[in-house]
Image 1 (tube, rainbow, N blue to C red):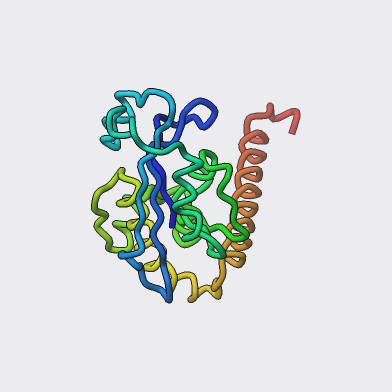
Image 2: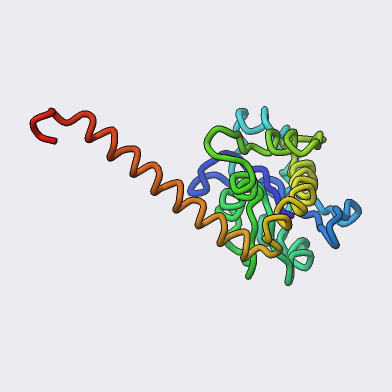
Length: 200
């Protein structure tokens, strides 16, 4: 499980200020495995970002840069499925983190609960499975919450025959393609309804 906090939302200009990893083994969260590292982003932390995660310039002034910080965490990720909530966002800031298998718990939520009527934020999914996240908007707190969400979702995935990250990814891709076909069909029906009667 991996989570980050950043100076902002744009991975082209913003940088990581905090990274955390926590492990899940045999269907349970290994809390004592949790590791959290502050990162010197090399740029100022905006007041807007500090208002979310509470990390200031002074907090990270003496912290290592990202490449050094990741050397402390990379052994925990080796050979494991890298999991996160809205994982593409995190990995967009972590180009040096590679994994053969990845799993996005937001995608898991969209697969298990009908989209778009259902919200898929970490808070929303946690509430849906009866989890009360602690220390939200900290890298370690969010990593633990994501791990707890994953563990709660595993039996639901297994009930659908989805017992691997690859199976979940394939099912999610098929689900997205099906939704896209439905949206295209609806647009075509709307457009036909808008055409003048003599052109139908």
